[in-house]
Length: 80
View 1: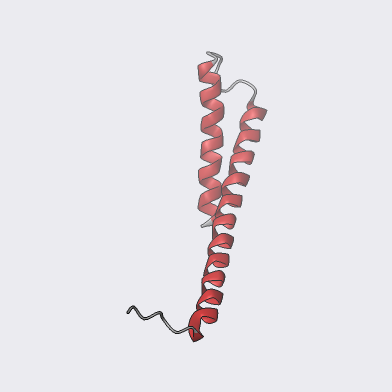
View 2: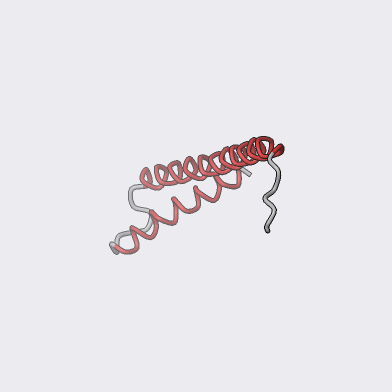
């Protein structure tokens, strides 16, 4: 999953740079180092986002398991 996030982020980064050049009506491939920068930044962000999602998912599962263990000995309330 992290590789696909990085590839997706790189595509978004390239798209942002091409869109920016298109809006300003300059040649799309002007200053190619900016394209490389935005591709790298997008790939890093996509990779980080995938890792963040996996980490938070594991933390939530851990918290839910701890809560279930603590509440195991509590009897349910009975309505009268």
